Image 1: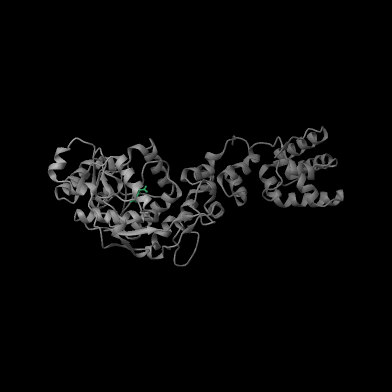
Image 2: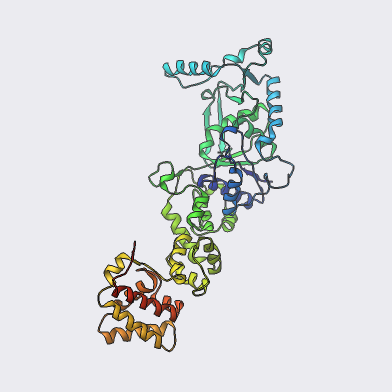
Length: 482
Ligand code: GLU
């Protein structure tokens, strides 16, 4: 039975890297009918941020990720699912390693260690603990009980450790690069590399799927497991996420947290779709696929080794694809939280969404582009005013308003006909009527097809807005917007 885990440290919100890791674990679990475990890795008290656990869970849910076991589910026999609540188990394992002389107490003070590091540096050697306390006798240790100490694991000084990575193949580490690293801190609580090895074993994790930045930790976790006579799980390290210039992704490349994207109005299923392509692709190479669809086809064999490029523009493109492909009622529900104007007067909401969504990439944009259907414009785009509101415009807008009041049937075709005839009788190009009309009714220079807009807005609103614009032009009181 496949059991995988996503193990965030509660130090903030879910960022795209974590979201991608969680997603790949979820896809893998679903593909092989396994289980996904959410484990909160709160080993570092000092970095814990209140509310972060909830924020992580919200972020995961908004990507459509469902976990089978976690801090908020009934214990399936593998809990607790917060690492801080597993302390007794970690202490018991450390006790055992001490008793078996596979680990030892180290009394070196931070000052002594700093000195040692400096001395090595001066010789051009990498920092590495000398192993000074390894040789303390039991009596010496007993005599110092009560003094500040840590526990270190005895690491083999030679040979090599091979990580059989399911994505990268065999990755070899010379054991000489590792020193006897700390497994228990002075307060006798575990460090990450110790707790994670025990927890993965105890939770019967079969595959550890995580970011490449953890690859150097893997041999250390294997040392721990070996010392505790535990069978290691399989490992798969996902490629780094890089910016288009191949640098490390950071804030300046756009938002980096899932909740920030939600707040910006990126369509969440599109974000999930985008993230699942960061390092993986389905066999047929298609780009638009939901989490459910990806779960049918996911495999680690198709995960690439090279860095995955994260591109905000591509994400927005993806959001646009979902904007136009999802059911219009679904988009209507999604856009509601972004609307800060009343919907009581105006056309049918879903009709407005249907007409407006073609031009929107995010829900924020969509909400803004729909505004004029529900609120008459009180200002007009500056570049439109300069181009389309001329001395002669007011009279033309009034004439159009009059003719529109007399129009027999209020639909797209009749409106088109009316504008054609008016252009002819006034001896102007149709565009010379269309542009000022669009600006007068919407305050904008671009938008959906004008006759669709007019049809949906309705006769009263259209004629009122044409006259209001004419009044403002004549009285020189046109307020311009950006
Ligand atoms: N708590 C670690 C992190 O947030 C996860 C490490 C792991 O997956 O083993 O990066």
